[in-house]
Length: 340
Image (tube, rainbow, N blue to C red):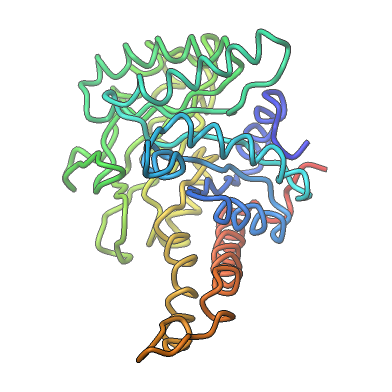
């Protein structure tokens, strides 16, 4: 059962929250980066989450049509086959989807899974993300209510981002300022609109200074202790201890202490994209520089097929990314926690 069933995905998240660890959620854009993520999880003996953003899905759909649904479905079906060779369990997830792309991405994918469930099968994806952070909180939560109902009916978990994460992610851009911190009032309004599990399970991407993209430690002021305030504020009003399953966005450059604090306060999923992109590309750049005269037909020569064969540098790229995924498992305490 390499691809989690709805029941197993819920168990994975419950175990993470109880054990104070989180799953790396690795963005993939190809069959090769998928294998790199699976290999990294397997080598760390950790379960994990594989995710596809709107930009990743468009790329997977091919540059002729750039169809996001086709790209996402194709890789998901591929994952269902190849993941069987890895001794770990993974969930399939779609990353950031803003309002203007819902009709071209998340809603069609929800419909596909609804049809599968109606036919007695499991959903194609185990969770989808609605990124309404560019909308007012009222509009964000109204759309979230609609999507949560559809997701729950298809045995899918919804991820919601209620307040902005700084930087840029697939065209969604937010300034780095004081708005990057979710308030207790924001969290209470979320619980009032989406419930605390009775309307369907959801993951909450709250903001505590997070920024997408590349930054060095110290350049961004992260306040993961804020997550404890959100948990306690909502628990006090609704009488449910640790009500939220949090997602950590914009984790590149985070310190070990910041990650540890986030885990202690309910983070069960942490997105990785920037770091894994670099880990995949760095060995390719190294190969190309070292084998310049082999990968190019310099001065009319024929080059060296062994050096420009994509399998040669592709293997190094996979190994580099897999290593970074395994390192993420260690940082998030998921190493050795795979389901038996």
